[in-house]
Image (cartoon, rainbow, N blue to C red; front, side, top):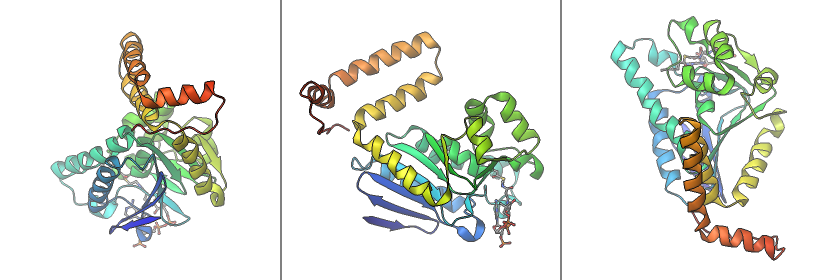
Length: 264
Ligand code: HXC
């Protein structure tokens, strides 16, 4: 196991799985500028590592995933500083969304404001029973600024996104599951094991194919259906010329369980 510690983040790599912990428990893991910069740096490192297949993002402690952007930093922002702060998160958040590795948010408590937003930038969300999701920004005189107005509406539909954002209506894990904001809810003590089990299942498949499937889903989502399906056909064709396709299909035909996937 490799461990890297930054001021506000902890990265633990074990085999193909990286656990990235936002580590500011005294501020309930609120995202300040330094944390966002470190996040961008560490995700750049991870993107360049072909041994890491899945990233699990979580928050330190048993109470909070991420309680939002850091209010004590934002309180004195000018308009220009606010815009710059929003854009500073945009780069690492798009990395979580579009990097070749699969990203899983293991939401272990408060996922408010920027916390809900960073979880939505991940591919998959698993929540503990005590998790609480919400966008309290309108109660602070601001709006969600780390992609929340966009990603929440895309994930749960406009009506529910508008209700949550306009009324600062927080929702518990069961409701988040009901409306499709999270994939699964488990007791807190099972959260990391559940996330790692899913990560392991993903990591056993052909990682090049998984990365291409992720690109197909993400990029196709922003296209019209005709172009999106044609884009998929092109990517499918690409995967047909890989070692992993020969290996995966030969293993099936030989009734062999063990597969040696090597592409990245
Ligand atoms: C800075 C925060 C914080 C935050 C909590 N803390 N959330 N500091 N920014 N977002 C700090 C508290 O000030 C406190 O510090 C310590 O963490 C513990 O929090 P408490 O409030 O004492 O805990 P508790 O009573 O259990 O309440 C938990 C809570 C509450 C319900 C999560 O802390 C809360 O409402 N936090 C703010 C949630 C929020 O509004 N998030 C959205 C932010 S706006 P001290 O020093 O007093 O111990 C946003 C915008 C994103 O995210 C877009 C930007 C462009």
